[in-house]
Length: 166
Image (cartoon, rainbow, N blue to C red; front, side, top):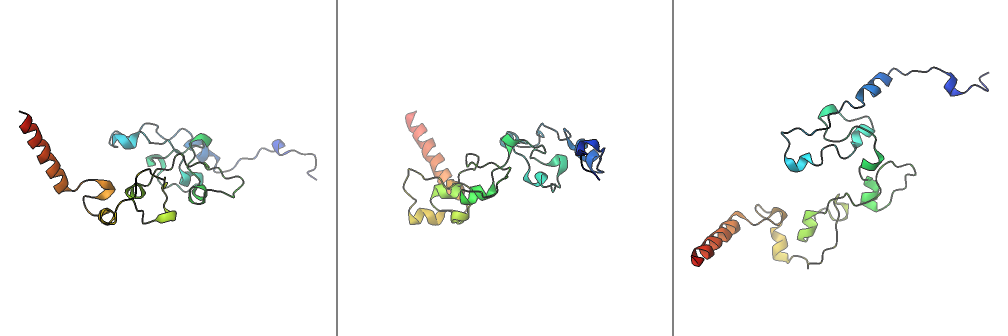
């Protein structure tokens, strides 16, 4: 039989090995100049979760890293959602430091509640009044931005105050 023979004694080659080796280092590291500057800083900083499963369809056009790097793994979805992961060999990050804060929660109300994919960090400010919360999501009020009319009135008031100093 095969007793006493180690696996290293066999010369085994798989037909997909050439494709695996061709992919190493094949992904460009520089972000395209056509990307906005704020998007370029995060370009290929996190491992592509689809690539890990062999399912990324974007190839070199993917904005995520196609290389296994334990330090750059995305956050585990189970850990992010339930604050625990029961998978013993889970390769993903088990920390919430990379999860962004929820802008809607910061404004006082998030429609996703506990199912939100962003962090609901406690704030030191009191929650928004019902009248303010009713404006959330309306045009001009997204992410707490002043409406067009409010910006116009602020600019007008600034011009008047500057004209009064002269």
